Image (cartoon, rainbow, N blue to C red; front, side, top):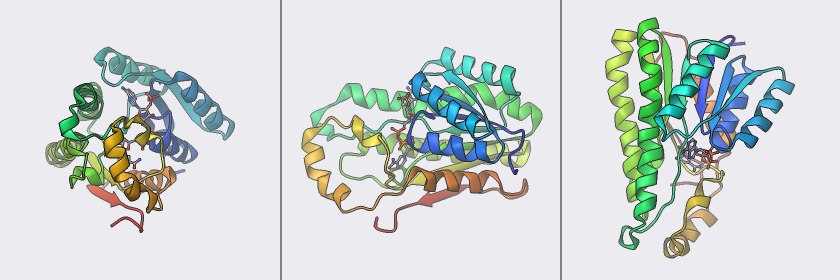
Length: 247
Ligand code: NDP
């Protein structure tokens, strides 16, 4: 097994890409720490992973709360040891037209998609730097490279995740032997679009979704696994993965 004994913290592990990634890494020997708010779904996933012979720990976590994230990293360390792989995956995407001023959703998106990543970095980086080893995977998006109708705030958060990844890489890789990979998925079939409440926008972008053959979460889990399992001397900086049908 490539990841035997490695400790991987995965935020947003209760569904979609996070869930698929947890299964993929656990199947390759990693001890996975499952973080999200929906504890019941995390517990089901833990059982599934353990049934297949893997190791998993559930820590109910809201990534916007620094005390939750502190507890996540502490409990992971107590149960499995220091974090080798951090997967900043938790995210929300309530797309909307700016003119419809969904202010609460804007702020919540910034809080989960950007501040959540910062809280997780704050709790894991000092230890990784001290041990001169670690791998940080940040989930940005194709929307972190280009803005689409209704994605202004979401894209702003995902541009931020890409900027953070670049800054982290420059600072941490050569000097501290910590790898940083930014994953930029296109359309993946998950629960992500369920947070959209702007009916006007939804009506306008319906056609875009209808004509797409979405990726599966497992396709992104495979990309993450590929980046993590390269030899230590190989640093995959960015991976952009779209469905073939997405332009
Ligand atoms: P899902 O909605 O299936 O998963 C989102 C995850 O984030 C859930 O596990 C959810 O768990 C978690 N989450 C949301 N808010 C919080 C919070 N405050 N604290 C902790 N966890 C939270 O969607 P995806 O799997 O698609 O999304 C995963 C990542 O992939 C996101 O960052 C998304 O932006 C990105 N992405 C997705 C694409 C797609 O097309 N699906 C394309 C490009 C990027 P819970 O509700 O239990 O807390």
